Length: 466
Image (cartoon, rainbow, N blue to C red; front, side, top):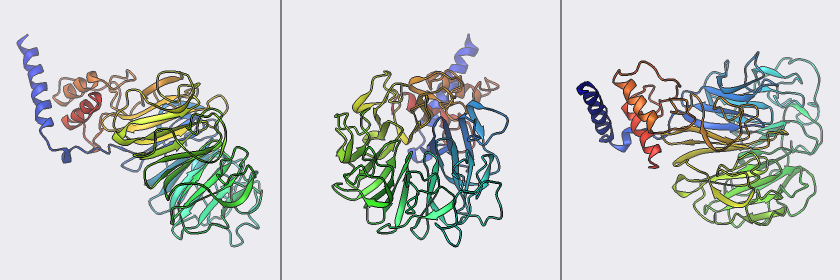
């Protein structure tokens, strides 16, 4: 009895001592620095530059060979150090530390950008544009030939079956499917190496690829979009397809960030307000109308303080002031994260996930039409929504309508699916040598390559909603 009391007292003393450390000593970024959500797969980038993916792998989109799918994260090999990542319908891409791009997965439309049309579970280099970009780069069958790797990339976005980048000169390059003009080169021809988007009215600083449309944010704060427009997702007041960029009309001020979804588009203005346009039959524009909107419309209740916005297939999520998450739109698989399956035309708060700093929404593939993922300070990576291919990463194939912890990338060390005080206790026991191992990995939420009492404090703050 005395031994147990001594152990309990030691654990409490360690926790108290750790909590006396200054906030500056508690790294709040954690080991996850970026998330990418695809059609039915998900990837995460760690602070060490490694990429982990999970979910569907029928096209090699996880970068793994010999498995059709994985409900837990698998490390992607052969990348080197990565700085950015993005996931399309069934392909994935990264920007490397040297400014190049590597992609893997499906390649039937040339979306890997390596001059071929064959898919690859092994990451391949994206090629530089050909000298006659836009005239002799139509999709060709066969394996990759000689290729000068693309360089100077500063921004990346993978769409349904196409991919786009921003390069250091401010130009936008795109490749892949082009049946609706989503490559922006004035044609409808698929391309298996990058082509330059023509007609931008200034230098681009960001690109966003939707299912069949693309948008660019210019240095001036203006937005231009191109591609499929049947629901008004280009924001030019029409429903006409565009093979070259057109101006988004009606935003009240400069744009700070943007996101392109299945058939809708969203933006945050410099004043922190959220606006969406395009498809809205499931409420994904967030104005409460359930009517398509060919011009930007304000999201109800989000006129200021919006930090991040992400447009999925037919739903949208945002990080608000106070690091809370709200979602709206289609919810048949629980992708809004409020514990229900009811669609919502206005934002509703995601359950039990405080202190979020990263957020992505996905779901382009039929039957897996929506999931969401977020990184929370001290709580690691959580996902919710459709899970038919294991894209939530919690070791199951069951849809979930509230956030669940991703295995090995969250401090859910007892593998319960939730981060609770039990995980804190187990972590402290491990730290003082009372426990030999944890059932699930992922306890290094501070990102210092050690599992210690600092991690316990961060997890405890997450559990307490601090």
